[in-house]
Each structure stands twice: as structure tokens, then as C-alpha cells.
Length: 65
Image (cartoon, rainbow, N blue to C red; front, side):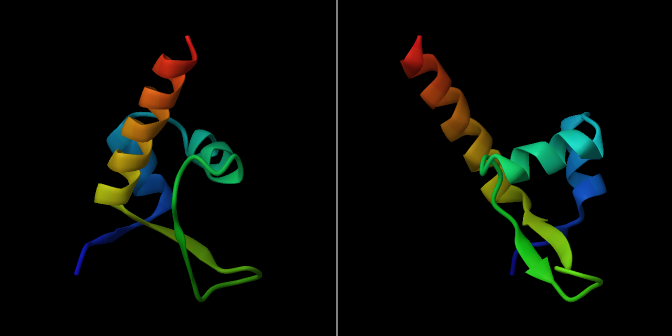
């Protein structure tokens, strides 16, 4: 099974702030899972899915030019 990463771990790997990851999730640009926690739960990410989503987003932006 793929490793599940926290928001901060994804932010660290991408060298961005955790709020950038929050915005990307809110915009639907990053896939995530919810695990048990306060309120709506905590986000967890599969690294391979994050990378693919970023590739797809880059391709869409290039096509839009």
C-alpha cells in the first residue's frame, strides 16, 4: 500500500507552505483522503497521486496557452 502523507509532509516535499496545499485541495487540484480526526478529519495524501495531479494540472495549463 502507498504511504499516506500529511499536509505538512506534502508541503515540505513540494517546498511550499501548508496553506498552499490547503488552497490546492480547496480548488480540487490535489486529491486527498480524510482520516478520523477533529471536525471533518485530517487530510492524507498518496504521493504518487499528488505527483500525477500536478502533472495533469501543468498539462492543462500548457494546453490553455
